[in-house]
Length: 196
Length: 343
Image (cartoon, rainbow over all chains, first blue to last red; front, side, top):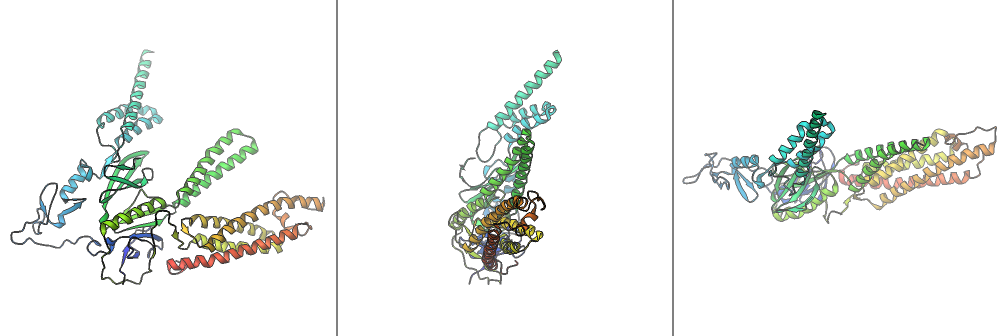
């Protein structure tokens, strides 16, 4: 007898796609809510009772001689944070690739954005500087502010991480060169007006 | 864009499309780009292969809208160019190209890229829209790779005790690479094309025996609609394995409606000259595309009229035949996947 689970419709986002065991096969299912036909690829994790739903957070108090969770002392410590080393319960631990980190560290590592494995966002300063150098040409009076700003930002973020996908500094350099030319042009214009 | 870096290998998506999908040692990396004129930031999401529960893909209407934009640009460019030709204005030609060429590019690119889709990745704690996937080809690349990687990391499917509900069973399609055509799941465009073919064929036959101008006009409009719906049916389902009955009927419909259209265009011009030439100065003088001239052909004794009428009847019968073949096949496919034809 085959088991049946529901997946989410890619169109209406409702959990309205009844899928049976696919075992690596693409299934075609109509959403029970919006009627849209979805192509669904279910995996064993959907049918596995252990992974099919979020982990439960039942109280599991520490026994005699057992370590308690650093953050929830009423729970038994089952894991050790690979970043700060504190003992934590399942409720406070997160599996991050091959590492286990406590939720506090995870938040810190994600917001700090220094560790590549934990980075959640990067500003692409090379693109920003290039845009800042080129776009204001259309509104040329703004160049008085934007050209020096682009140059300063270029030096400031010379070593800032660029895209996660490796690429050269060419955008940054082009942006800075354009900004430099704009500053030179502004300087020449001021000199010309002053000496006329 | 690089296809690999550090421990990651590119799977699908592009930065222009809003993101890329990468394969890591034990997880997918979804890089989403946020843009304001240029790309200003990237955000990263990682999902372990063992946590992926399902990937669902649904078609969207974006492709239709891209086509509308392309047709509008092309139409505008064509109209400007036509005006330029009649006015002998070379400056207008430039504007004709300025609108027409981008329209053509939009249509060609949209056709080549294939249907637009939205893809979602489901885990126990999240339903994530994959922003980098906008086209079916890209989605099938992810599906193809995920099927391999996630199955390896998740192992064999464990048996559960849950009883099946009374839901519509899903139809399984074995994955054989990204070029596998999905089975035909029924389509409103195919059903509409079939109905339109039957109606167009009937009107075509009626027009051959009727001299009412309204019938000629309606017949012409219906044939145009039928032809366009046939093209839409073929286009919208080109990634599906259409049954040969539907495929043959729709292609016949396309060719026949085009031929009928060309035939009507020629006849309208021929009948114009014939009316003036044979009946003489006492007869009504019709303008070039006067639809009434077509219906006057039988009355004025146009020598080719019997052949024209026969061709109209034959083409009408063929169109009805095509519609009658395609319609049941389309309804059958729709019943199979949706439970009932109106779904």
